[in-house]
Image (cartoon, rainbow, N blue to C red; front, side, top):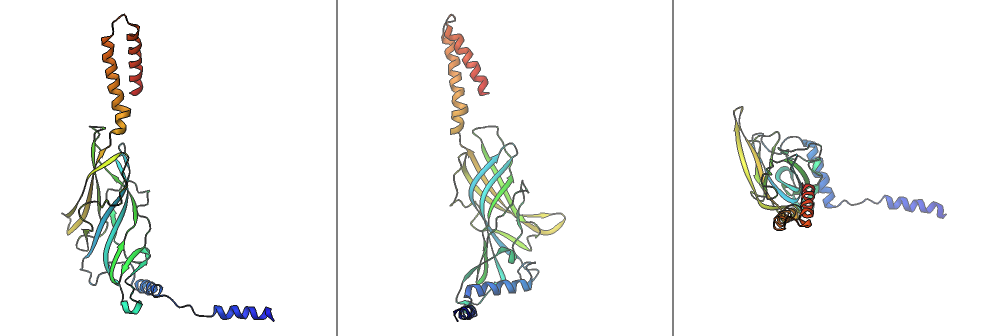
Length: 279
């Protein structure tokens, strides 16, 4: 009797309907309706309308500055902000939910690229969900590692100051279709910056450029972020500058010693060998 009753209990429990939360129902409806419209094409009412993308960079870490290959490697949080008219909902129909998270691959995203990218083998953006508001506002903050080309001048090494640029813009849209604006302002956001052991940030700035080319009447918009860095010289003081000062002082001591002193020859040989080793 028990053997027959137990499966019946399981069957009755499993047949109880599970009520879907407002959040899951909202995400399901948003993605379903969005896919029915298609994720290709800008989310605008008219094809002549311009969609505005607010873009900002939070610098997390200067990972490397390769002087030989002239490549700057940075770890950043890239923030994209825009409005998608097809991602709006009525608050009363979904339990007054104001924001939800949706997979970024299920909605349209702007094709903002780093123009002076130096290594295509590296994955530019790491995956992150989009935060969608009930009024259509979309915020996407993927973590990114950028390898950008940078012109290096080591004339005054190790007291050099380097300025590197990161240039961003749409890869396929002109300014009449997709406009770029600063999210935080014309600078790097540095609230979460991890200090470098080799470089100090002297200044960060940015500039919005609108360019016209002879081939096309449309404007082309880009944002250029500038990072000015000064090399920390404490390390080089110990391995380069201090030994040179000591060897120079030792050379002066040789002139003070009398010619017949055996120490003069010994110090001279030591200074010569140590100088070759430093070189």
